[in-house]
Length: 150
Image (cartoon, rainbow, N blue to C red):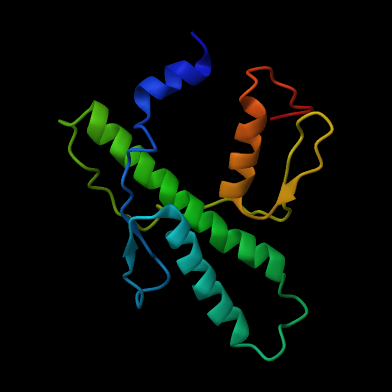
């Protein structure tokens, strides 16, 4: 059995999954959305509003890195939701985590765009969701052509 098939046994069917994604942009926004694309668009609105507040962005402020950081928070929110749904589906008797949620959103520094290393593909993107969707299109062949370290 391929790794892909084994994973499908544990991960809820994404086409049937109804998301419930809560915006975590500060304490002032409590929007919840059921559509992943709408959720990412909502985050992009926050980004635009935040960036447009500045007449002139300070030189030391890396705007590309900031955008990538915020977009990764959205991707991370999706991953947390999928993890929760996977646990609910396969282990419904396990109670929810009671630990403090203070550290739940620690994400890695992302100084560079995501770069596809599949064969001689030159695709790059700042958005993790779009990057992984792109790589998944390559992976449909079941023959790994990733070059270098994963």
